[in-house]
Amino acid sequence: MTYCVALYLEEGLVFASDSRTNAGVDYVTTYSKMHVFTPGNDRLFVILSAGNLATTQEVINHIQRDLDYPPDNAITLANARYLFEAAEYVGRVSQQVQQEHSTVLNNAGISGETTLLLGGQIAGRPHGLMLIYPQGNYIAASQETPYLQIGESKYGKPSVDRIVDHSLSLDEGAQLCLVSLDATARSNITVGPPFELSCYRKDAFHLDHRSCFSATDDYLVAVRKAWNDGIHQAFTELPSTPWRNKSATPQQQQQSQAPGGFVETTNPWQVQN
Image (cartoon, rainbow, N blue to C red; front, side, top):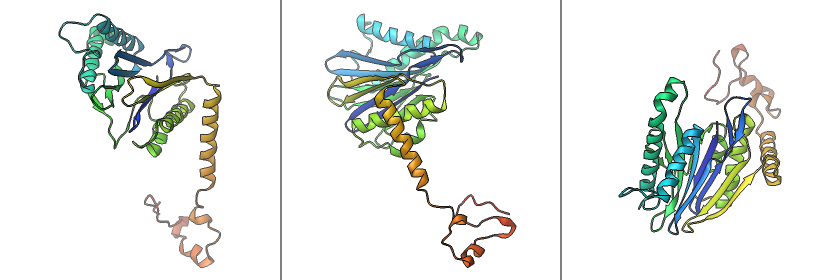
């Protein structure tokens, strides 16, 4: 399994991925799931991948081959005029690779599907971020929903949902992505470091930076500790439950006690006797 998350921010884009690939608990390996393409000075693309590793590698190889030996009268990353055209092209390549192996893989009970995140910019067009499904179609991130995830996303989603905003800086976005990755790795052993992180500032057409964090990296450890300490601190500062409110008068405590030992509160999920 894997986990990748990317942010669509006013300043640019943030991409983050783990690098753990497993075929059972006794066979765990490390592969980069972040692929960067700069087919010209006027464009940059980053692809994050989750799913069948063989399918993903073949898709990436086909994309690179089309850049090295451009097919006649065909859209590639080198000549796409819009980001959605690049997404359509990557989706077609993914579909072709999956269909080529689908019969054999299905007979073996193996999924050959791959899901991709494509982000980047073409000169004269705004930067953007898209999720390409195994079926080849795609959706785009927006200012209202400025992030996309693929892979084992449920554990890293709550931290992103609570904080993400289109106006975050690239540095803040990078911090949030690391927190999301670390939260996922904490709850799911199939996701783990090294974590890859890259930031793209709009209209730059090159990455601001690209980093890789091992499990013992000083910065990653510091982020993990600060986040965990902050959560514990927030928990200790939660308001007391109504039935443990020592400041309530005996009359208030008696009024709050319902028949059968249940406590009446304004909670919409109140237990009924």
